[in-house]
Image 1 (cartoon, rainbow, N blue to C red):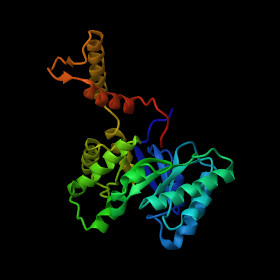
Image 2: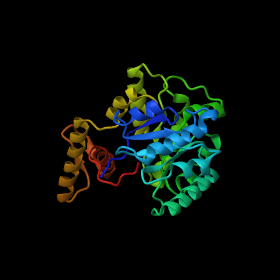
Image 3: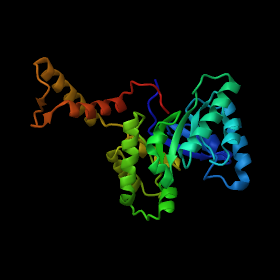
Image 4: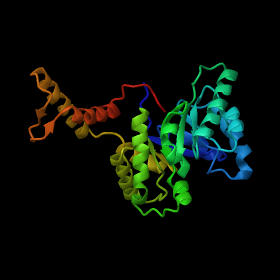
Length: 288
């Protein structure tokens, strides 16, 4: 089974040269962008280009970021067997209901199973932050994404290099995802393109904060993102040691063990170790 995506590459759908080269650059999934990366004058061109690409794509996972004010037109054009689903910008409950209806209509028209298409809901508005519980429980929502540039502009925050000013909202997105039992969220893009150390640092910060993927706007960012969100051999070995130690303790009739380092282990530690192993050796269905 395919692993949960660690990296998503935005590709402007009206840039046919970029779209033709995007596959195989290292992204776990591509997002054909009809929204921010496309000027208003090119929306129709981008929609037609995305539809043409998805009609005969290479193997892979393909999402489309639709326009919040053109849901029906965008979905009708790009829906097909190759589409994994749509990214919904400025996601709020009412908009997600509109998207669900449009996707359901497309599935019926194409003869596809109900809820073939998934949704990644981008949190980019203050109201979206306040409606996180409703958003995570909306039909088709597999993950949340965080669009910090739009959100910061709306609420008047001026984030510094480490994004600390938005850390409380990041935590809300992570907690809402965990509470709803959906896949851990996707972190925002790093807009500084020629600073690999910064990219690695901000991506590691997202990992520590509970994100398990990140969007990219340039293929050169993908290798770093994938590396950060893939457990190292040492992390995998440590996780296996934890699980083995607890299993041995339980065979002896106790739920607590102690590592050679002196660290106490219990079921709470097991959950963290198990999560590391799931990311290293996926055992669940593809969720985007």
